[in-house]
Image (tube, rainbow, N blue to C red; front, side, top):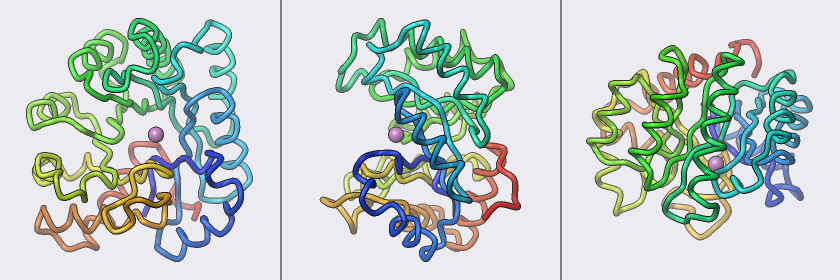
Length: 258
Ligand code: NI
């Protein structure tokens, strides 16, 4: 399996990164996309991906940090995105739930990074919380039709999922799909097209139900696959294989690197 959204570049993993990678490997999670959320974490993601086989990097600025966005940051990210093993731009997007950066700055950074992905022909990893309409509006205006768009940690209802389906977006499912109260999310996972489903931990955050209250890590990815297999009434192995194939297609990963 491939963890398509992992923050092993976060300081929570500084002391036991090797052990964390070994546990993931033992759990059948052989590849991870390490997602950048500002300039320095994007740099760290690139360094990790160039150090360890099986890891890939993205370059992005989280909406919480959108106040840091400047033309210089964009220029630096353009250079980072050209590095070996960078496979996407993001995460970027809008978070109108926690509102940790002014909304107009979030929109400005999101527009610019979507433009960068378009310029470089890279997939876009989108963070959206309580900003469905505004997110779709930016994508409608800035993302070319052929761009691969990944709605990371999908959190919408059926109507929003339907809008995403019409645009052929990938949906990333985290441990939140395993939570007892997430019936609506499981319904989306049940009916969404199989070729557009992705597994992601978003670790160190959002541990699946059996690990709640602790640090999340890529080794726990399988629990998300189990929940999706259950709700779709499909064999676990089929969900594992399909989501792995989807991740390779979405991020353009080679099949050779384990
Ligand atoms: Ni994330």
